[in-house]
Length: 143
Image (cartoon, rainbow, N blue to C red; front, top):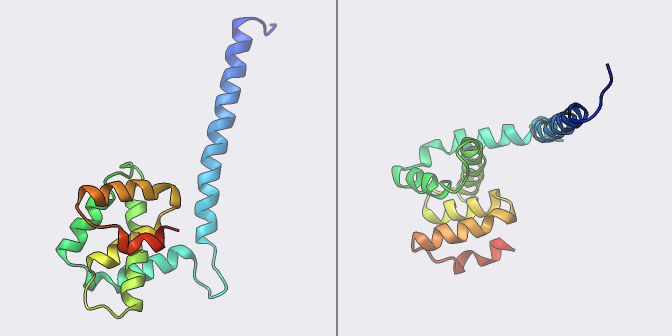
């Protein structure tokens, strides 16, 4: 049996597709693996996220939860829980470091800016504009 013509093209196409999909999946799995590795203090980035979320849970009011849910709407639904966990961890860290009595709008916006990559800041700016929230007090965080 010889491989020629359309069948050869079909096989080569699927080889390229499978290798690409494995590479993409491996990339995301490797990133998650690196986040789970313990740092010098013995805790991983995921451990710290969980720590800040759990220790700041009592500070979250209904308004704060609604605002966070509203801000993560542009995130694709598949990735939304992971994004919310990461952002809530950063917000909790900020609130705990400032000994806040409750999480307020400024904590949420600052935490969101610091927790998200720069490429996602344009979506945040657009969302804040839709919510009639001034971005100017937070410009230094976007840099």
